[in-house]
Image 1 (cartoon, rainbow, N blue to C red):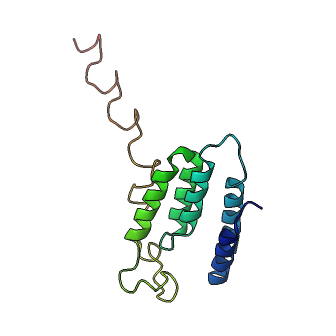
Image 2: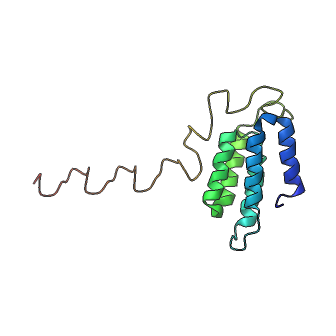
Length: 156
């Protein structure tokens, strides 16, 4: 009930394009529907909803990438704009170079980021806000009082 006509049509078109994805698409549609349910307490609702919708319709992202961005949106709706920008950047980077009217992953059998062994967004440590390798206070090699070579009361 919370999807607009354009969104519904997008999911229906995706189903027609790739029936094997029906379970995933259904899950995405439900997610989007839930995400767009009116929430009085969520001031990011509109922004998040727009980001959800746009990310779901970026043609050059792999399923893993799309799911990663969607998860990030759920984790922190306040950064919807940034997540959407990242997703668009990645989508553009993965756009097929030649004729732009070729829908990637369809007629050319070249699903970007899948069969080329280069799943961007996963092994490139660029999942926004998640595995960016900068977990503060953990892997920064600054465990105070341990490996600083200054064990008090011993080596003096």
